[in-house]
Structure formats: structure tokens, C-alpha cells
Length: 432
Image (tube, rainbow, N blue to C red):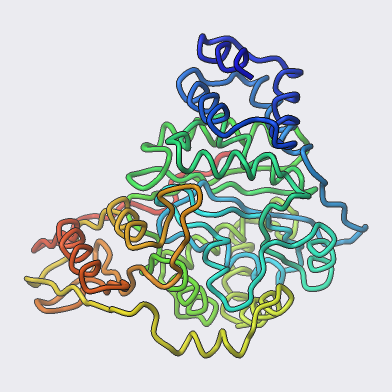
């Protein structure tokens, strides 16, 4: 292991054999965390070439079992986001796609840094299990059309170990590591089609559109070479997605979207992701037709029933879940009010994400426990008109002191002006 660390530190490429041997040792628990962390940091600074990235992707994929589905006219599709603040698209998209006649074996992950994790959000639902066996995943997909599960000791276990360390060692924003982590999970699903949501901006791993385009092209090219029809969206992450950030608060917003009353930006991205996948899977002739089908299905409330079917299939207690939807969240709720009338012109997604993380909604260390109840909702977004005394957002915290500290930080990011400034489009490009 020391020789591999030194080779990568000095800028040398690792061979396929070295990478596969490394992943095998990692899977067997034979490499200490500090050496893995050292290698990850060397990769961040020295990078990996295309051959190394492909080898790492395949080695991670092959570290466990892969999904094997029976013959079925319904295509297997999935979507993956590189992570953002308030990004709960997957939770709406999976049941929507299942209602549109495709199968969705979604293997997701926990939060990295300030970005929320799909599994962390789902585990705020009473009884909901994300540690499903490979056999359970296949059976559930065949029965109800969708599943959202985590990696297990059976499926891509090596990536699970790397993922947890990247979160707490400052090694998240590396194109080869991101590519291998995402694609190893997706290739293990046996997909026909894949859509990647590659985010850029203040709260994304890619800070600008050029970096996001480079990552998207790398992943799209490699996934297509591996036999999965893949394309990517480039989406803005300078502003939180939706109006809620925090695990349970985002689940409540998912329900609002499934009921046809969700935030416009969340619905737009959900519909576009569904439409792109329908087009790739040849379930629509044009992107316009695909968007219409997705929008109409979302408003039919059938995906809401499919969402509850998925909750039940994964051990969730529907009665307790409905009670929780009607109840409060954290111990302390504090509203922040506008000090002047005007238009919201700034809402920094990164600062919002850091505040929610520091409230307990994200991880500071590998073994940090997530508090599902804390967060921010009723968030005013750029372009919104607010009156003096109107609500800019509501903070959910576990103490008055936490709430006051969060309040002071958020006030510094919500800028109000007399004129409405032009807002940037959410979806910037499609990479094929």
C-alpha cells in the first residue's frame, strides 16, 4: 500500500492490476483508514487518467454482487445527482418513473459534506429500511417498479468504504473519484439507461459550468463505453433546490410535490429528468411529448400512491409516517423576518447547507449521527417579493442557542433589493 501511495504522490499512473488488488484489499478490510485517506489525497492532487478511472470503476463495481433482473418489457433506468443543497429529486422521480412504465433500481448514498443524502432523508421516515439485500431489491423492483436502497456488504462494498472516508478527509471534489463512485453503483444495477444530474455553483463540488461539463463528459463517455445509454444535465446549485433543506423537512416537501403543490423549481427538474429518461428508453418520440407525459402523470397523484407503496415495501410504518407529516419537527422553530420590503436577490446555497450541517443535519466526521429534524424551510428564493416583516425562512433547531446562531448567519445571506434581478435558468445544458 505504501508503494501505491508513493507512486500516486509522485504522479505515476497505477496499473489495472494494482487498482484491482487495492480494491480487493480494501473490501477485505486489510487497509487502514489512514492509508486509504493518504491515497485519496494523492489522487486529488495528482489525478487519474482515463485508464485508471475505468479500472477503479470496474474494480469497485466488481467488489460485490450485481443486480440480475428477469426478462421484462419495462426498461431499467436510473438517475444520479452529484449532490446539492435541498436536492430531493430522486425521492419524487423514482415513483413517478415507475408509474410511467419503467423500472428504477436506485442505489443511493448518504450525504457528503454539506450536500444532503437521499438515504439520510428516507431514514427519517419511521421504520424505513435502506439496507436491503440484493434479492430484496430485485423482488421489489419487479413488484412495484422502484426501490431506493443503499449499498450493502453485498453490493459495491468497496465504494461504500471509500465514500465514507471522502466525506471527512476533504477528498470529495475529484473527477476520477466522483466518476468511479457514481458509475460503479450504476453499472452494478444492470441499467439500460442512465441520467446524470451534474451540478455546479457555490454549493456543488464543481464550482463552475466548465468544471461540471468536464465531469459530465467524462462520466457520459465512460458509461456509454460500458454499454449503458447515458446523458447528463448541467444544473445550477448556487441557490437551494426547493424551499426546504434538512432531512425530514425535505421529505415533507417531496410529499407536497407528489400532491401537485411543490416548489416550481423542484417540479421542473423532476419533470425534465423523467422526460430525458423516457426519451432515452424510447418510451416517448420527442422531448416535448415526454415532458407532457411526465407532467400529467405527476399531477395524477398516482406517483403519491406509488411512493407509499415503496415506503411499505421497505418497512416503513405508514401510520406513524402520516402522524409525523402532521406534527412538528425539531424542539425550536424560529422565523426570520425581512427588515425591508423588496425582492430577494441573493440566497447562498453553500451557507444554507453549512448552517443545516452545523445544526446536526450533516456529517462533520465519519461516525457523526444525523439529526433528521433540524433544518430550514419556507425559504424565500431569488425573485420572490417580500414585505417588511414577512418570513424569509424558518429555522428548526434543537436549542435556542443553535437557532440564534443560525439566524445570525442566514440573515447575512438573504439580500433584499428594490428591484427584481434577473435569475439564471436552473437547467443549463444537456450532455449526450
